[in-house]
Image 1 (cartoon, rainbow, N blue to C red):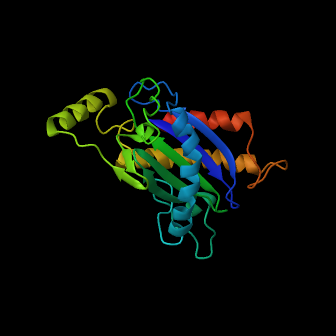
Image 2: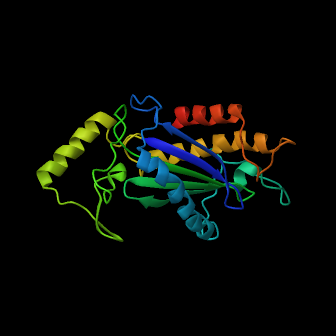
Length: 228
């Protein structure tokens, strides 16, 4: 699985971005996006912001701690962790999926994940200008129309079994829609938020200022290695 993580402020401006690969199932932590995918990823992230703005008013997916919270006084204030909103998987394009996370200040954390067998070579570029091979077996036979090539049942079953044997079946490194993957992404978002809040509280930074700290980047990569 290759990941592209981005933080977008309330002005729809990216303040931080980083790529990394899975460290599960023998992964080496290196992102394997093709050049076409790298060019397209920021556009997919920006397009998903409309879904985030809509879903944040129609969801109750509060990112509460995993353990039950103790009883609180009647007029107590919620902690920052309890005000986080995990929207889970909000959008997808071919084989790429985007998960979103909202902070109490409406800063958006977006994670694009592209599943593929770990420790493989980078995905080759498309053979023609109308191919979407960086994101799976989709071809564009007519502008604005996506079609899937026909495959026999034997070929499909054999390809699925080969991928499962390499990637571990329903593991995080192979299945972007499983509950295990959603929980791992939630834990990744929470840990990154704890590091991010310390960074934006600096008198030299803020929620709308780019995060250029190498320490913050290293902690994001460490959280990705730990959970993803």
